[in-house]
Length: 112
Image 1 (cartoon, rainbow, N blue to C red):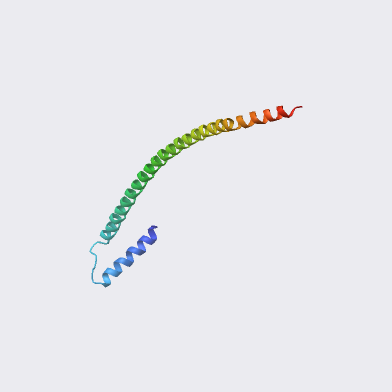
Image 2 (image 1 turned 45 degrees about the vertical axis):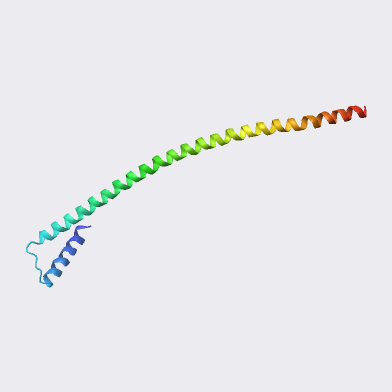
């Protein structure tokens, strides 16, 4: 808070307390009280910031672990798809081989 604004705020507070009958014996005590209050607020905010930093670090570690699991799962899926593709090709060849042989025999029997 700029000094001029702080001073005006302080003067307003002193006048308010004087009008309430609560006369401050030492105006510097009010400033000291505000300074302590602001320091406590800063300390609280620093604590929150530290807590949030730790939370971010924790979430980053969790995200990295999750990415590793996703990568491993995708690698397994890819390997399984390749295996499946090989099996489909073998099955297709096994099914088509008799058909191809039959077609060759039919063509051969028909002559040139």
